[in-house]
Image 1 (cartoon, helix red, strand yellow):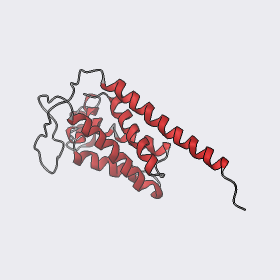
Image 2: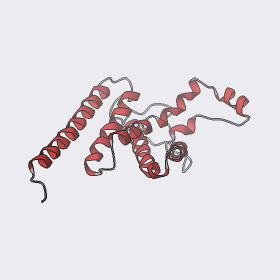
Image 3: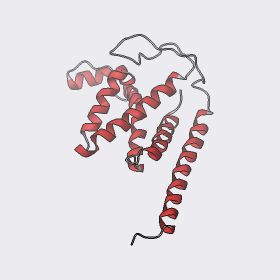
Image 4: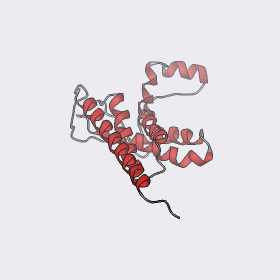
Length: 174
């Protein structure tokens, strides 16, 4: 699988490139997309807190597998958006969703393995399988993601520098 670094860097790259078109995406909000890229892997909490432990503590039936599905991440995105000030709710929700979407796309590009996720739960419990592009053991996705993130950040900084130069060379309005 694309490791966590790859997921986070691809979300950063997408948010950074979108900031060229949408000025409301600031570097601080771009980091929200990076958090969104981690949300689907909250299903790994099962390794830290077993469902049995959570059930006995909370008195509720708990399963971690829905966290890697549309239904599970939609709930987390909504909760995340409600935790910020009202003026930031929509941008936070959109950027969390961007990160989640990039995570799912990267996971769909994996060579199919046994026990694939049911991404579209609760809409359907059918497994979605695409012909894989890379294996979970491949190491090349992380360096590619690093290069893409560096290139996108460099592009944004270059554009900001050019706009500052343009502003300083234009005569002030009288």
